[in-house]
Amino acid sequence: MTDPARPQSYEPHPGPRSLTSNPPNNSSTGVDYEPHPESSLKVCPEHEHIVKSICNLYSGSASEDDMVVYAEKAVYDDPWSYCDTRYKIAGQWYGIPKIMASSKTLAFEIVSDKPTEIVFKLRQEYTPRVMHFTKPVNSLVSLTLDERGKVKYHKDMWNEKDYSHEGLGKVMKTLNGDHLTKITRPPGDL
Image 1 (cartoon, rainbow, N blue to C red):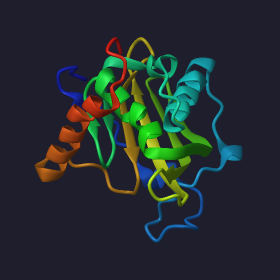
Image 2 (tube, one colour; image 1 turned 120 degrees about the vertical axis):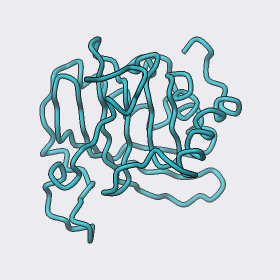
Image 3 (cartoon, helix red, strand yellow; image 1 turned 60 degrees about the horizontal axis):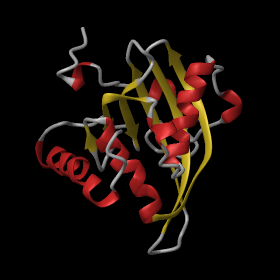
Image 4 (tube, helix red, strand yellow; image 1 turned 45 degrees about the vertical axis):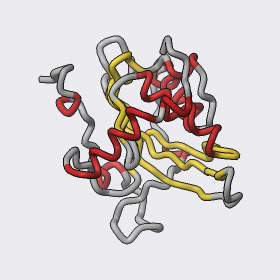
C-alpha cells in the first residue's frame, strides 16, 4: 500500500533489462536506453499529454502549463537531484535554460503504460552554455501517477542501476533539490 508520507512506498522500480528489449547495441550491460519511436506503445490522450509536457520540460520549456502535470507533493529523482515538492521540481526545470544553450528531445519510446504508471526511453541532446559541445543522453524515465492522473513520482535513470536513498549521495541530491530554487526562482505559486 502506498503511503503519501513515504515517497519510497510509490517510487517506481522499473526493470531496465525487461523494459529495454531492443538488442543491446550500445551497451555492455544488456540495457539499451536508446529510444525507437516506431516501437512506442500507443497511449490514451491523458498519458500522451503527460509525456509531451515532461519532454517539453526536458527541452527547457519551464512553463507553468507543463508543470501542472505534477502533483503538489510530487517527487523528482535523478542522479543529481531529489526534490519532494512541485515547486522544488520546478527549480530543476527552470534551471535548464540557465545552464544549457539548448536542450532538445530527439526521440522517445513509451515502453510501459498502465493506469498509474508510464515508462519511456528518452534521448535528450544537451548543449551547455559554458562549453558549446553537444551531448546526447539516453535515459529511462518512470512516472508514477496518483488517483487524479498527476505525476507523483518522476524517476530518471541514466544506467541500469536503481538509486540508493542513503548516504552522502542522497544528502547531495537533497541539498541540490532543496536549494536550486534560490538560483532558478520558479514562480512561487507552483
